[in-house]
Image 1 (cartoon, rainbow, N blue to C red):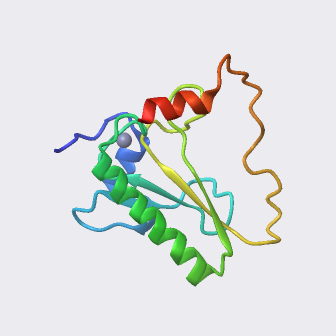
Image 2 (tube, rainbow, N blue to C red):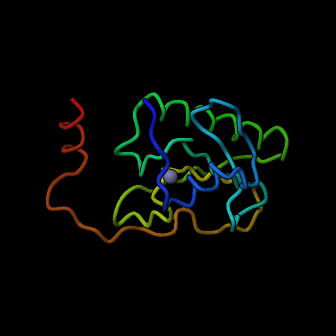
Length: 142
Ligand SMILES: [Zn+2]
């Protein structure tokens, strides 16, 4: 399936024009990786599907799997080449998630024991559901 780039999508424009600071870009690959404009850490990388999908809800499972394979390759490279002792992987999809660009992307942030990042994730939700959320999730996934 071919998905046309969204003309108003900043990531589709970067991919189409080839102007990103590339970390991984292979011909015909369904995912690519490039540096964000405002990195949280040295080596912070974004992994995105090459085709336009707004978020986790509309991305085909095979594209998602290939994207996560690239996430793993990037994380492994952070450990072996940057000496990172860990990584944080963050993605947001949909209203209320603070998704910055409506094109599915995974932040892969290399971490070191004394790197000074003191708040991850950024806070604790104050949302109070009316019923047991884990039971509802388990029921939906059966
Ligand atoms: Zn896009």
